[in-house]
Length: 128
Image (tube, rainbow, N blue to C red):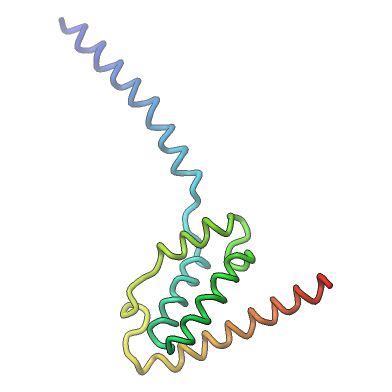
């Protein structure tokens, strides 16, 4: 009787042992978010918290275009990166403590927009 219980335990352990590595492999195939993806998500939240609705809409469009162009993460498909960026959005109160911080944050976002436009302009000129 004791042998049956031990045999059952061994079989159960072997089945569990076979299933666990398969799960671990599927988890490893989806890469963890990068710092750039988290930063992109944070910038979108800051644009929403500090900017006007028009600024937020424009920044969001440019941010999606940057993700689609591969500027955020070149090693993963843009659709996966966009999905990750959307999932990583944090609370705006964590990123911008008070409204007094907004002018500095908006200035930083405008600089980012300028550098992205330069990169985008440079790429389109090279294609022609």
